[in-house]
Amino acid sequence: MILTISLNNLQSWALERNLFQHKFMLDYIQIPWHFLSAPFFYAFLINYLDIYEKSRKLLKYFITIFIVLCVAQISFVLSYSLGGGTKDELNYVYERYTSIEELISFVGSISVFVYSYYILKGKKKLFTRILTYDNLKWIYNFFRLTLLVYVLWIFALVIKFSLNFTGFIYSYYPLRISTTVIIFILGYQGLRYLRILKERKNIRADIDTASEELISESDQEVKSVTEDNKYETQFLEIDKFIKSEKIYLQPKYTLQNLSGDLNIGSSTLSATINKNAKKSFVDYINEMRVKQAKKFLLDHKYEGYTIASIGLESGFNSKSAFYDVFKKHTGMTPLAFKNNNSEK
Image (cartoon, rainbow, N blue to C red; front, top):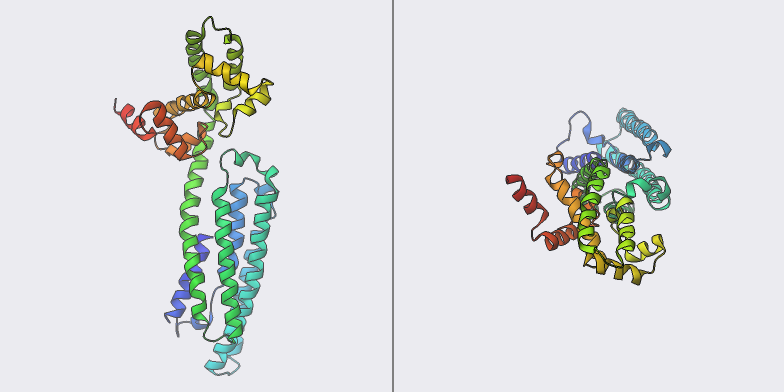
């Protein structure tokens, strides 16, 4: 998608600068790259959501139509040039032809855009697994930005048709600027989140072993702190449930969720945890997350992994929350902790 938008903008710039004039008939060959941008995004989306096998294979149909459009455009230019028309006549007819072609492209593109949003919003049951790695907010933001691009595209087309295909070039400037912004945003966000997704999948594969070690260590701490406490038995059951079910890895898990899972009143749970762990439920859970994060930060297997991946897989709901909680519990940032301990 980034490539097709870039090529489309580059082609528009080159034509405006008259760089193609009188060279191999390129005055009259404008490849409709915009026709492929939405289908390529659709292909990216279904691959990112890991539902390729259950999706409609739209991309191959759009590529076929794209090739047909290119051949038709070349055939049109050749046949009309041989017809003996003047250059001004050819310019006008060609602009009219490409405008109709662009209108078709717009209809096809926005149809794929709407269908892609329908999949993202209405087919969540098909990609529940990816939602455990990514809340997809960045993709929703991309849809909002792209909607603005379509509005600007409509604006440019309306002016183009209303001016009878002459003097319309300036109406495309806002569209070119917005698509350039999309190139940077999608390029940065896409590559960043693809990397984080890959890292989180690798980290999660090792979560079981790390969790067992955490349970063993924490049990020793609990026994030393809670001896002769009348809430000890109940607390050990709560503690075992949280660790065996890896509750601390769920970013949005609350005391109310725990109350529902164990069928114990939230006030009783809070009191039990406070008396035995000597901390609130939130600090109790976050302490487990920090311990989990420490293990990954010091594991050479994850040497080149992003701090965000480690924090998110340790149960924090954002990179900023990870930094804040980690510093509260250790007195230093995750990066400082990693650097200080890697030097020793």
